[in-house]
Image 1 (cartoon, chains in turn orange, yellow):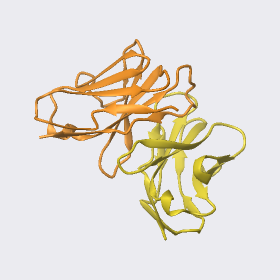
Image 2 (image 1 turned 60 degrees about the vertical axis):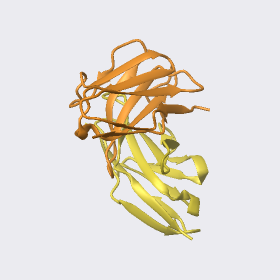
Image 3 (image 1 turned 30 degrees about the vertical axis):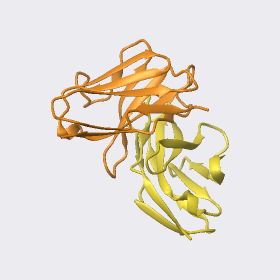
Image 4 (image 1 turned 90 degrees about the vertical axis):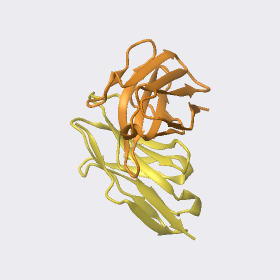
Length: 118
Length: 115
């Protein structure tokens, strides 16, 4: 149980285009989902916290107009990288916490999406 | 602000020997502490967590970790390493007192178990 999927697993796009990444909780409902970014040989950095039906909370330094997050249902959150540039190339990972879960409950992570912007 | 330090980029252990992956943390209040493992081309998998209570926490695949408040550490251990334990291990923390709801991760430690 507690499986999280991401789609696509890998995407290559041209500079200036927008890319949407989906994160789905397959066998549980997730009130809260998180988006992380991982650079090569570096740790995961929290970008934003997404709560179903409300606006996402962005971490300091993350441009909310560039990284659009939508959490329209209890099983789906999307991250759209708008007007992508080469510096946005990274590994994007989502995670989900079960509905009603406390902040000490573990998060379940998706397999990640490798974004390469040419 | 909260932070996590994993001082070792890589740990090499012979199969069958005990292993330790180090983690220290910094939070303003009391911590929730987690260990995750990442295999190549796969997402992070939860291993164990410390919330409260017994300082020794047992988790998946025979791993355990000991919470040491005075040393602000949460080292991951296993009595007898397997080659299949080779992976990237992340320690993570969340301040119980508030702040970001997400986790703060260490940079990760590559664990290599040699046959």
